[in-house]
Image 1: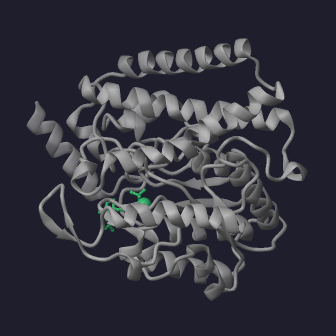
Image 2: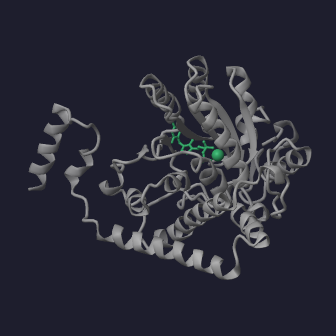
Image 3: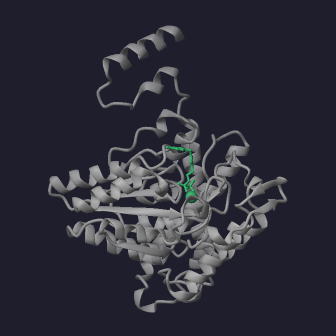
Length: 385
Ligand SMILES: Cc1ncc(C[n+]2csc(CCOP(=O)(O)OP(=O)(O)O)c2C)c(N)n1
Ligand SMILES: [Mg+2]
């Protein structure tokens, strides 16, 4: 997102009464940069924010559009119900991702279950799209061991909290697949903040040099907690960082799921064909707080965040599907009902998981526990008894 730090003049932050170079100018710059990139064609787009088709030649089949819509609705259901459950004390602290569904679901939908997914804490939408069960995901955010072990038929890593560490690891997984002669790929997510870390750059270089079948998704959502992208870097187009590593970089409207799916599908096909890695910058926005425990009104005004609702990825595709007759009012209502029922059934399942025992904190760390872990486990059990 093109936010020039030079245009952000220090302002007195009315909300906090402190000097700030971040708000609200950074907010307006984010909005202006998106609009400018959109107008200039710099952002790859298939659907405009009002649902109009910009690239009719690239519309995927109706079945694919419907699938992407369902995945975004499932993700949004989790996000919205997650807030309520948190307030009820039925879910721990989790990072909401409302407004970023196209960036997560459109990209992950280009994978199969044979591929690897390395999500950050914010990428529940991606993990659910690839098939991580909702009940296990709820368990994860309840800090229950039932959410720590991934199902055997999935190569989805647990949500990474340490920023950027997943990037080099994804390259390793991609290279392992390559050495084994499969056509499987690895996809790793990172935020704009994470892309300021050394691991990001090392991974891109490593992947380019060894032609790893790796897809790097850089979700530029404008903020790293309270730090806007313009404060983290002078770069205004993060996809161009790929040039430095000799790999393709694409900048896509991260709120247009048809666009994110299209570019990722192309990147995945290239990777399977031994044509190497791709960096995809999805330009999007974190409409909600950093986590449910964060108060964004301390660093930005919520009125301005509301402007991003006009670019909402879910209603964008919804308008298109209704207009095209791919969805009718009735079939749409039925889809929403199914999505809600799926979530409630998963919640019932998660509620039925037994409470964790203290010793379980050491489970799932290694396939074969180390002698030290076994000793600690025995001590914990003894203490408990
Ligand atoms: C190595 C490391 N340093 C710092 C943190 C603290 N931290 C948690 S989230 C975050 C911001 C990350 O921003 P971004 O990469 O843009 O992701 P977003 O939260 O916007 O999805 C930071 C600095 C951390 N988790 N790990
Ligand atoms: Mg961010």
